[in-house]
Image: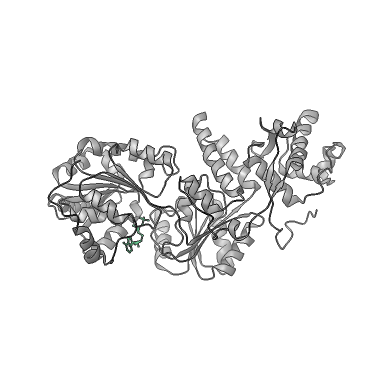
Length: 529
Ligand code: ADP
């Protein structure tokens, strides 16, 4: 695509000042806008809150014609359009939730050139009627928001995005800008390939969010830990609590309300009206906590979200980064807090084993999960690990848990051998498989009814692990699974050996573990060690 001689790139700053009321561009914006205004394709990678919207809104206003924005965020289109109209920008949207008469009016305005921006749900582009509508009007640019939705192995894949290759085929002269906050090299290449953005210039902003304090803590008593975080560090603050299942969303929301913290649930199982209502209240009211599955949050522009708490492990570093990125868009100090435990490791491995799709798919899910494990178990700076994952350099940050309170590592080779040989003996000598509870009871030499029932007190490994506490053994098991040295199987998460277990048992491999921080103030359970 060649530069359009009719347009003066200098207009961009004027539009920024006059229409949006901002004095200056943020890092990266001006370059991107000038490139697109001049007719170039662009792939924009910028963290959440970085200011991606202006990167297509301003070119749409500066260039002749209507800027067409493809966005999966149907629930937010009305809000986005209202916000633009309030600034005097002529905007409209087309999606399936709309009244036919409203749709007709928007189509008319588009054809008459009376719109600056037209938001479209991706599924509309599968309709020939939409394509012919666009062909009859004048399109200034195509913006593809949340472009990572085209990545087939990503966490937000939307099949409708695959149809967007039609834009290049039918409108080769119209500049296209794809935008996302998901940044791995692999995702970037997949977006470029699937959207036919061969000539596009890539603009990659820094993904550091210095105002977010990253913390990943061992999960002991998640509810109590969450309550403590909210009461002691974030009283009265707005925040998001992510849970894996709809059931736990409901339970945690109720738990918070019972404890005097205003909280709302959000998940795909709620009817759309309740969802919309809860979302609107979260955006408009102060100090609400949204307890949600990952169905909540994409495109939510609430500047003062002070914390994002995860009670369950995200499936990938990309997902974690996106979700935590919803904190602190206003640049003020915010917390990203994740509680992570043995049960998460077992559960996530199980989810992968039972997931649909072929082996290659499961392997990919496994790779994503392993990267997340590595982030959780690192004894290095979390931010440095996170940025490294996105291919960016970072020095030690001073604003994450590992920087503020450096964890120690310890030689866990012998502990690992003890645990693995317990699993080995049970299987070899007794033909039995057990999960964490029984294995740890054996190591600690506890004569529980179940130990007696199976005669496990006669195993040679019975009571060989009293030097560690139950919590520490759970930490050992969790880290062995995370490192692939121990496997889990079946509905009950029974422990099995992996290929790599043999190296530990055969003393060919040392095991470095992260020291568990001090035990929680209150004992974990009554089954005292
Ligand atoms: P993203 O889509 O990258 O998550 P947005 O486009 O929603 O981010 O921008 C985040 C916030 O930053 C918005 O409230 C937006 O108005 C504001 N913003 C963007 N660019 C600028 C700028 N140049 N000056 C001041 N505020 C800006």
